Length: 315
Image 1 (cartoon, one colour):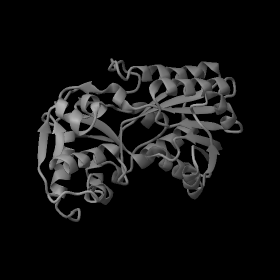
Image 2 (cartoon, rainbow, N blue to C red):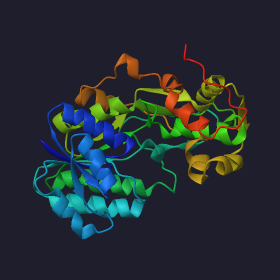
Image 3 (cartoon, rainbow, N blue to C red):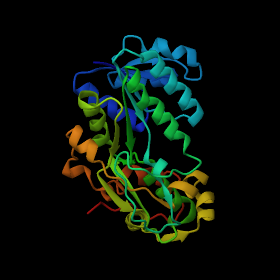
Image 4 (cartoon, one colour):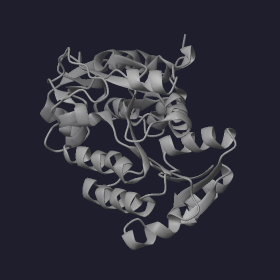
């Protein structure tokens, strides 16, 4: 199939391109500059130059494409405009549109404590006010199934793998800036997670087997933030430290401190496993292994203060 990806040069997008190219699809990627053009060409994808701020220019980018995957990072209102434009253009075509959401939408603030609640696809929950508009954007995509668009939503959990997880990088950042790997409160709070290559496989399976209007979660495990912090601290030879939400906002930012790093967000994905026939490979289920990936510590050591111990080989 001919497939265009918005967000193709990002962490997730690059892995989706690699997966789909390996399975014989013809890939194009949205590009804003010459550097992105070169990145896409090196991945075997055609660069489609454009500007998502120019909403009227989007339909031309979609011409001749069988599938659109939206995996770009935009402000929610802008994301809404782009999503609406895509479904309007594809109305009545039967073509495939996959919208990427995220399980931070389902975060439950606990100040670092564990929460027993866990959700499967379409089970009711109450989103935080700040992120609730994402549900509207998901609905625009899913409801377009009634307008002749084969639209689906994939809602990934915390993404990791190959040394590219932003959350793991953020934990390393706390070590570099404070001398300790920080977690909020007792660090018992949990986010479900997924290896980036397994997530890319779910996109491929959704293209091949997914049902119009469906919501698919992407989950292969869950680990408490405090456990992740401890593993990284042992690797760097530094302590862990409990911080308040207010301190976390200073170490990271308000989004991480007030929503993600103090919350639980736990999911199950029975629809993904049954409808798409997906299950993760055994060597892609342990996020703690990725916590020791050398790329994270290498980034830390490039600006490392004297307290950072030399990296030790992972056992």
